[in-house]
Image 1 (spheres, chains in turn cyan, green):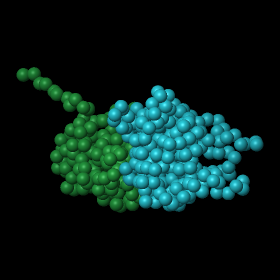
Image 2 (tube, chains in turn purple, red):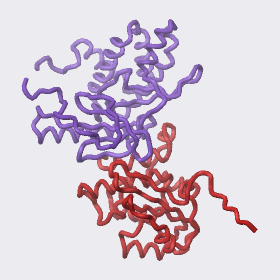
Image 3 (tube, chains in turn blue, cyan):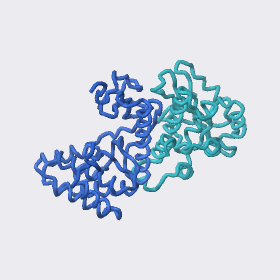
Image 4 (cartoon, chains in turn yellow, purple):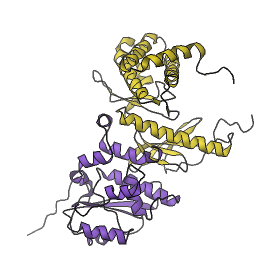
Length: 239
Length: 185
């Protein structure tokens, strides 16, 4: 389809931050790394999408930027680690975030544990912690929107000493109290988890168990999760 | 006999930093303690609003640097909420969108004895320290010693830092996040 260029937004504009290095070109945003006010910083730039009506596009982009900042604030206030927002440029929809250094993704951690031949049971403690954190996040009515094992970081994990879990990439997040939305959030994670990490059904069950134990609101979410599993992520099969 | 000057290990008397987004601009911060003319400085701030802001409610110089960056940005895009760059820095420090509240809480009060001066200047300009030090009746100390003068309990209250939040980050993190997020709450 003409004009449907996958959201590249035409020519790549130079980042507003001198010396910034492009890390990721996504469908929604470009992610850069650079130095900002003397700190290692991630810059997330939501670019205009040419296939959308400009007025609608600007509105949607602004809303997404605001929702990302709002979700991070809610999480941190509740004690859930997420990158600090340093600065938001609402004229270009750029978010300047703390770079989480010396970290590995949960994805890398699970993959390397499996590759080293260790039993997934050694990851049960981690699964428990992920379940607890997601329960806390949902209790704050934050729906992440893109839960994967790549969007969870482990900082300072050493043998025998558990590291800090940090949630990242709130680009598709929003505030909602609906069990349906939280159920879909968990469904997205389940899909991503099981397809990224083979033979981890028991590990994911462990995560869910911990999620259920940690939140009074969990039963309603799990009920929705069961429904969503049967019909898929979309509420309607039309379109 | 010979005179020996022992410079503080940690840093210089004043700290000058770049604003990466505005390559021709720099921010210099100077810190004073035992200031005796706060009431006078406050009047000066009112009359010559663009002179310098006096901010004793700061936990770290990064907090004021972030506020200065935001103020310069809003000035460049024509979206300042206050009348001058320096009042905008004070407003940017506040976690709320109420301007008079921001000045009441983050401006200097007559009883303050510590003063932080934040100057935004052209990078090429030769910075004349005497322009500032001659106006402040107090003792200049290395700017990065700000945390020794900040009132933690007061700052936590100003930014409504929750105890849970302190488990995942510092008070500085909490303050900076609220400053960045105040437009969307």
